[in-house]
Image 1 (cartoon, rainbow, N blue to C red):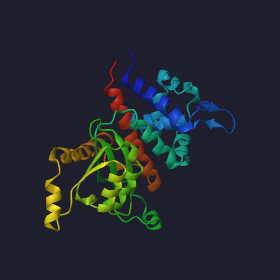
Image 2: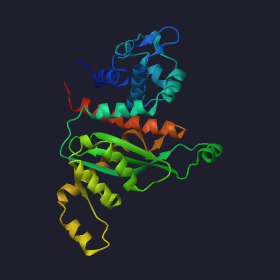
Image 3: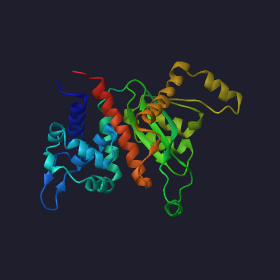
Image 4: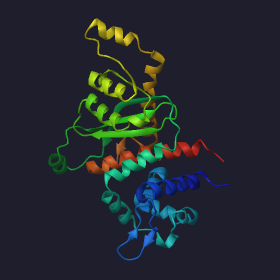
Length: 279
């Protein structure tokens, strides 16, 4: 009977071969070819899944020839930990977002999706780097769009500058309209233009109004409270991510931190599918 780690690796390889390169490249080519992108991505997912630093991960995998074989490699062909680390930065952000969408597609979505935000702590960078890139806050503002039935993370957005929730919400929701049925959000996403855009796309917005006038209170009273309070699923998923992977990001650069957060959400999506499909 295959272990959960083996099934997780199988899912990663199958998913990433399709998502990263379509017709998959060989895992290792001599010369300038090197390791295929899908191998590097799978190694990073295993690092998050096993909660190991790069050097320790490869030491552990050296004792797991069966797992390494699922990557199309032998133990002697495992890359150096510096290669795994460097190649992560070389892969464009678009690839990591494709992987997140692909991992979310493993789940069957329900009728209600929710959006909300939290903060993840950053590893302390040098003062010189902080000034150079313009860090303004101690936390990365992280917005997640999740499916309330499957608890899959559909999409995420990260910001160092703390933009308003309405602007982030519009960006995240409009690029995922095909995945949405009913969207629930708190008053931070109160924007009539966003509601109209969702309705025009056939999506039902359940977004509370900020109560400036009696009409706003009347609108809020019409909401189905059972549906509206399903937005608490986002908070539960944030709690699960922080409990599973920690609240502090290890990457030093802002673009590395973005990739790290997307990877954590991807690993959680795959892990949920594997754990709920015991043989």
